[in-house]
Length: 353
Image (tube, rainbow, N blue to C red; front, side, top):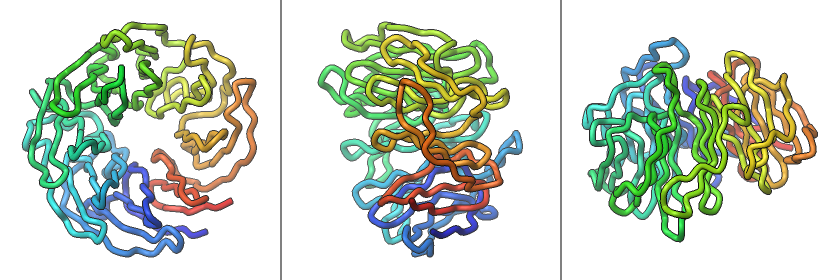
């Protein structure tokens, strides 16, 4: 439908109310840009200076998707800058989380997307005594902080467990379940590789009172029963679905996602939720992202192909294939209003059926 050049970054676009909000880097600035989702034209942009440099030379842009809630856009930059911007582009407040909380840069900078719940912005910061921090959504002031865990590359979720809302984080150390109202730690479980050169990146998946975690680097996956309030393993192994960075999706009791390291060629797999049994695997698929759309799974491969398939535990059944990019694609896509929005390292494309 349309395409345009964009700045650096792995941050997924967010689409709300006919506007696409893109968080990317242009020169020495991180930019929040509002784009008309039908035409691809810029409505406004807001920017600030950043000095982030990727130590491994991958990409100097932001990694975390913008979170849009109640008329405000919350972004978390690669150097830990947390900002709140109004829907007309006015900067409301900002925080330098690495400076304010002494959080380390980590391997690839900050990548946690903010989650807003009951007037608080929940974020994995990773400082001493401030592994997880809640900020007031209106002012940016501290509400509570907890833990010494360093930040992972996973974003949190808020979901009910045993009838109570809980904030669920997958830090660099492992699982943390908190009361989002006050930051009280309700449960913890270490789930981390023995290798120092490793990260936890996939977002936790919650279904009922069960939590699924997955990581690579020899760590593997685990399904936890939280009915007692504390984690109890239902199954765990490094053979079912060990995801390097992409989060799987859950449909009708089956997980669909990528197993294995990105560098060595990940498999696309379907795994039974309750047992960890592999139902099928496509061993030549490679790494990428995956989202669920009704009864279908939509994948964007790192090489730039967009693949639509059935969410079917009986076997992989592809429905459509489109080559969108020649460049590497790491960002998740956004699906809204029948259109698909995908970005590479340099381009943003809108595709429609």
